[in-house]
Image 1 (spheres, rainbow, N blue to C red):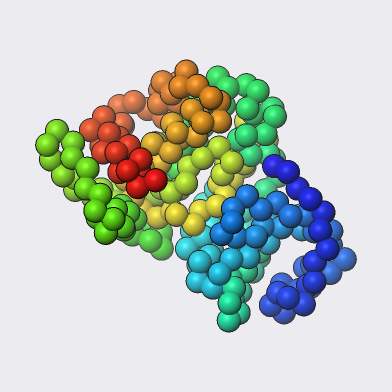
Image 2: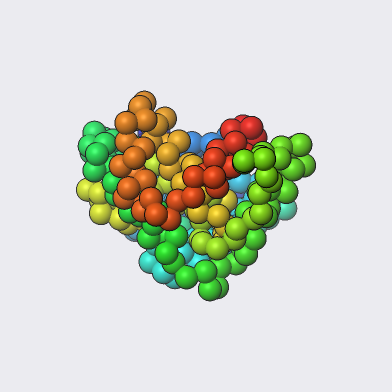
Length: 242
């Protein structure tokens, strides 16, 4: 990910975060128009994400939840002011799934990408702060007039596994393919595994510019756990929504 060193006025962030930024070098590593993200190189490496007030609460709570299972970075601070949320988290050692080493070895990448999604979906749902993620997604789609049919039938929500919600290659950190953590968890909760599976297939096809590795990803995940009708439903739902 491209990072540009920037000057940063630490007095623009809430007081509890300011001490961590003193004497630190700041790099802009934003990849979304909805949030500003900075790599903080101080006594320790961390990331500061800033977005509109209320928009980072789910990411904060899901990151905390998965951090308690050693699957996400530790949250150092979460603060809000009148206009913004500020999420300050430890930086996970490693590189994301689109870094050179990873993207240059697509067979290994697709395989471990499926394995790590299966690992996430095998996690106990106990204690997850968001219980009905699929129902939320279906309601959002319904409000847009989107109601896909599979074999002539509508869909009943399955909220049965922990989903990432944005399972794309930039949102997994690895060190030479060894899992280090999931990041950008603002769409997560308890939901239907096929939502994540769709995005896993999509990101491999998009970033590798071919669908050659789809079956490898699905085999590594476990094809016996994938329902073709449910995957077809979410494919329609997501593609009609975007």
